[in-house]
Amino acid sequence: MIKLTRIDDRLVHGQVAFTWVPALSVNCLLVANDKVAKDEFMKLTLGLAKPAGTKLLIKSLNEAAEFLNNQKNDGLKILLIINSVKDAAVIAAGVPEIRSINVGGLRLKDGAKLISKAVGVNEEDINLLRDLLSKGVEIEIRQVPTDNKQLIESLI
Image (tube, rainbow, N blue to C red; front, side, top):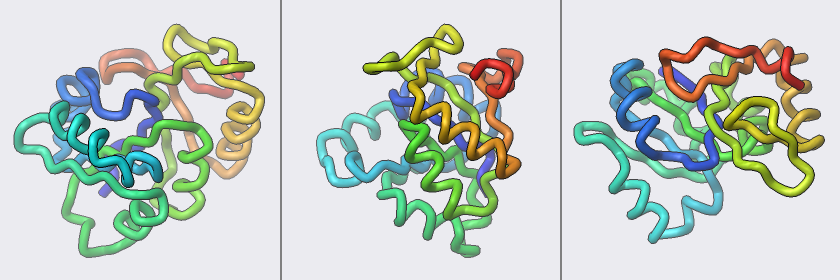
């Protein structure tokens, strides 16, 4: 079961390990990213950041969707982490269970503007976010669980 789907370009880091994992009682971190799935150094680095007692899986977007749609994995409490709006749109299209997405952090890139203190989006991101909203997916910004939810439609 997916406890939270999170967009965060830092992937696994302190906020995830020390606030989200205990708050959600997750036992599995699933990083869905085509590039990281092929990068042994990044896998090792992310493995060092995961909390003890929590499984870390790093899969391509397609592999992650297959994993999430497989009923054999329903017993896991999963925090799904994606590093871009584009990848979130791809995986949400392939995983019907995703009905809500948390945006935790997106650094500014070319053509992007800040819509909160930790989230920068460009026009492509905004279009993808609007498309997800039109499909009934709730999208909220929160860095840590104790923050108040900011619904993204009021910010874009």
